[in-house]
Image (cartoon, each protein chain N blue to C red):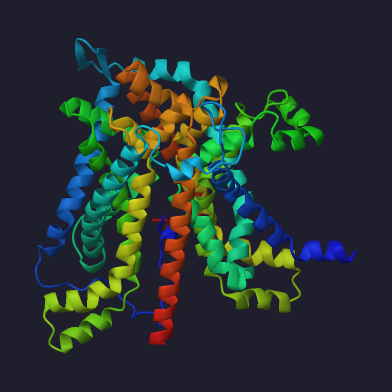
Length: 266
Length: 309
């Protein structure tokens, strides 16, 4: 009876932890199988412990090339989408002008559209224009679909900003440029950073839109997709594990720095 | 949508502002908007129009296509691929319901019960975002493999007998069945459900729970009458964020399914990239878009939350 009561009281916690396990199970498998020594081309069955793949992550033809291409595209897509998106977010929050409603829906629509539809229509455009599919078409597509996410992230932050801070700066004889650089930008920075990070992650991981518009260019997700048909090398799991660990460490450090700073200012 | 990335409310609420102040420089907002909006118009809106025109064209790759207002393409596409359409909606709806059932307890746990573990759990929910989702989806192939532990346990418990009878699995296989595809879809879109749910749950004032308890409401009543209704914005945006991308997804159906579990995304992808029948492909993706927009509009009306954006 005591156990039943305990179970009832902690039902939410148990169910929640079950979901967390469901979310993390594939990551666990990816980590474990990065130490596998597969028998054939496919890395689906556990054979033998080995650190071969970790010692030689670039040992598979094309893997590191596609990885560096994906990083480059993600970097430029992040810069492009953040610059364009931040400008839009400021204009939407700070200014009154015509067609705000239309612009708001133009920004919302790409997020509410299934990726295949966007990918396919962009491909029709590129084909109609006779554009050469490759690095540039992928970059254009990535900036397009990351843009809305950046706008949303930055807008949320700018909306929660206290406009009195800027008025105070102006009362203290700061010019518009000075106010923007010394007051507005630092306060909006976390929102801009969040938007940029989101854009980077979305672009780096995007498969569907890239699949349509890359032509014969192979990004990392395209490489993984191809290898699923040809045989998945262990190195793919090494990259997957490394990305997970780097992401966790990155978020942990940024959190520690953030909480320190908060404690100092408090 | 905005719930995904919304910043936590500031400690002291900013002064109420009815309308943005008018600033010097009437043209400034337009200059700020111009590059980004131009980008969206040229690479998002214009392609949609191009696609609309492609869907009513006839011709061939060799001779080129011409607009002939050939609407029959729509009819042909629909009558040939309606099973895939139905399947997409069924799979996406199942995945959305599963995401809600699985995601709600976790979001609730993070918002109210996690205490000092909150940040860690949050990181564990978000971090998989940064690992390639294709790699993680491939991992499901290993997890659900024939003769693997998961299949073994389900077999021993005779779960697979029931699911086979329902047509969700085939014999003692899970891989290459509808169950595997729905499992993959649920997994891939779960964070899109958890994050909006968490943001809306986190905004609920804990004192409301205490008040309900003081008024002799049982915990289940508190949940039914207070917590759940207040989390409705999160439920609506979470279900939309899962359902819409899941309907168009073709990755899970390709990696975890078989020829019998193809979704409409698979058809569009192969029509565009393999068969090169552009009019049919364009018509299909237009039907998909229209169907989703119609379903979403009805859903938003019914759920009574208009301020999603």
